[in-house]
Length: 568
Image (cartoon, rainbow, N blue to C red; front, side, top):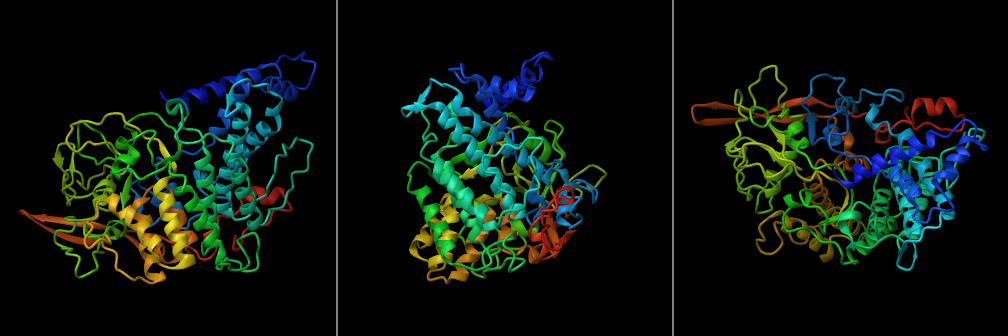
């Protein structure tokens, strides 16, 4: 079991100790608890560090996070194989929710505010602990303090990208006697606060590469603070918040004006991360998700080594390696992958053959999606109608003719699954490179630096160089390059909880979700295969209100100062 689980257990132990204070204590229990955790005589800071680990516990693990599904199964990249309209991601993708029925695993308002409160408790109390350990010449407690501030900034970002402006608490720890009927801060104020926190803490955090990566690789670094800032600015510059606010004059739902300089600020922030020269793309796309402490990892959420991704999402039909095929990638996602020459399958010069649709494709397709004929568990997958992995009986199986491959181990030529790394990537370097390309294109057009950023992603993917542009047309307009970059993000970041939010911040969810999500039905007669695109699920998106979540009904009910988002 990994460090993260150990520290969570340790944090739970501290909570148990705190709960065990005797009835005859001379001070109120909450005071005793704080004094016990933040002990003025604890030169090791043991109890305080355990409390910090409890703040880490609010980090989400995106693997099967939404009722057993990936969040991106509520986008146009996949659907859930689980039956029933009440399935959580199906509720999201079919617009079957309101302000009091948002699916539990995505109803995160109270969840993240609980994490923010823990961070505030730590930030306001840690100074009294006389920690002797040093980092760069000063007490380690100041590193810990800024780790808590980083986590708090991240939790605010998770709220803002879902709800728009939210109440900012500063360092305040509210008590039962305080008035907590707080209004929402403006979207602009929230972005400014998160960015200022990242700037304030970056030089106190640890720096990568870490001196003790085995013990510390889960911890935020200077690069993580800078990457979080860059991603926050990228979202803030995007159409949903910058120029296409769903309620044009409402400062809670975005900026009330368009400012192209916001794109330039995002580009500069992304470039600053790149200029650290401590992160780089791994040579193999597949290795990103199977390699710990790699040069591409910026900030991760640790998990156990296991084969749970395979057993949850692997194809059915194998007696020695059980899978239940939870995630069904869409035909739209599969079609988004270009050919290995870098040309879209719609390009007549691409060489795409609809009667042999998976040959000579972008290698990332093979590492993202399991399709008919894919080598897996010492066999070639049978995903034609009636095939071993698509028998069409009562057993749960793919609904689209595809299974998810991403994050899985190298089980092409084995008979069983084995444990491997399944850490959840929260910030990784490819995201920074693509963010830089996107922001720079929007602020300056398709410059050479934009081309070079996109080319670096395509080169690592295994796209052929061709004449040197890896399938990219020379002299593209800003609009043409935008389409390329958005598609590259879709392919590179599939199932990493990016697509779901990207289609919102780009204001395209109203288009891509108000059409059926498609799959592939393959009919085998003799040795010949016939490919037929079919509708797999009718999804729905109510625009513009669903570009932001509703503030939870109970929050609005109990707080007269809490304004609801438009349309809810």
